Length: 500
Ligand SMILES: [Zn+2]
Image 1 (cartoon, rainbow, N blue to C red):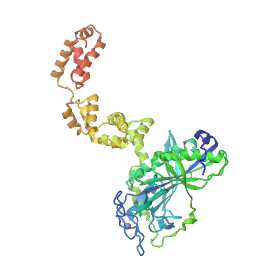
Image 2 (cartoon, rainbow, N blue to C red; image 1 turned 90 degrees about the vertical axis):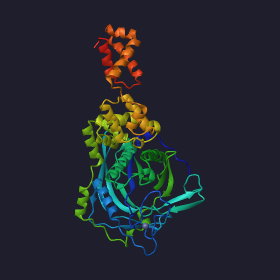
Image 3 (cartoon, rainbow, N blue to C red; image 1 turned 135 degrees about the vertical axis):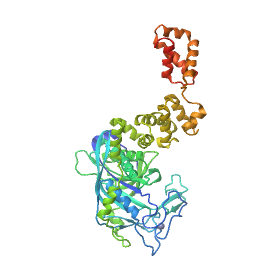
Image 4 (cartoon, rainbow, N blue to C red; image 1 turned 45 degrees about the vertical axis):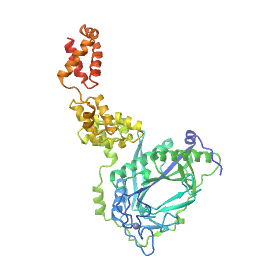
């Protein structure tokens, strides 16, 4: 197959309007699987968390996990969905080695949650993403292809399969077509995935770790010529597993499809794979139609009919959701829109909030996390939250500053020590001898010495050239290895030279 010519992104957007759809799978963090009692922990030895039910052995019968249904209802409510009064599971029949039963218990035409929305913000504009449905299903196992260069089945010598994941509760969230995003389409897709992840995380029902596969996005993209009213054929890029890749996959598909269409070709309805290394998608299998799955109501399970009382109870139990929390934080911390966006993008909201909860004022907490500590995280190539320092430790450093025991310069040395694994702030201060010289007598004698050593400068200050005092303050700071209170040193110098 020849490689299609890609069209330049701006040109593609000038000629075509993208239409997106995003299907997101989220593994719930329940203790046991969807229809059996097997544990769900990540990373266990292969095939140690399985039983007759999740292996689909003859005669085994599934039982619905109530905690999983609670989890999906919470997600539905947080997405402003209607929770239906009655619905059923359906069997989705297909043969794939990572699915031991040869069917997946899912939901088809009777999903549990319908008609919701989630607002996301891109460059100061709000986009309302309409949610078509949120339904419950079970995850498949995992295949491991051994011996090839790419880890894919092509070129592999043999394949292994691990059923530990088979039967883990999986929620699928399907958007309605996302239109009128223009050249912002890739950013809107990313913002949606980001906001959805934050929302689900705030509910505490999943750890939503994209790198571990507990949240994965399938991204549908189609193009229609500007001014046309009929949508084009869409491709579906499967299992995109980072926020950045969601954005890149949309962009890549826009460039590819525009190239195909403007060369007179047709976009094929198919699933595609996204490659992190090239930032491009390649063709997978042609997309099955719903009828290929021969759906029918799952005969081994009773219908779900969540009572209105239960739904109301769950609604009342929802925590503060991310959008409301951001509004509150902006108000309480007195942030501009841009400052708020920076704090959110830096992943610093939780850290600053936890630092404030331990006594630091918001301005100081934000200053340390957003400047000094962000810089060090960038240097080390890690997320801010992964730095080996806790909000409690940052609050402690700030408390020492407020008490006059440290200045900002010394505080930076304390952070350096904590990050280097030298212990908590108090231990670093003690081990490195970092306290501000607050003993007046000691400071005064240093000042006297500095004046004696710099007689010419001292004369200038005496003669009224107060600006020259800066050199003397510098000398005091040097003599005390930065541990003097510079303001107090300056006062003493001017006092002693009769210039105050
Ligand atoms: Zn099991």
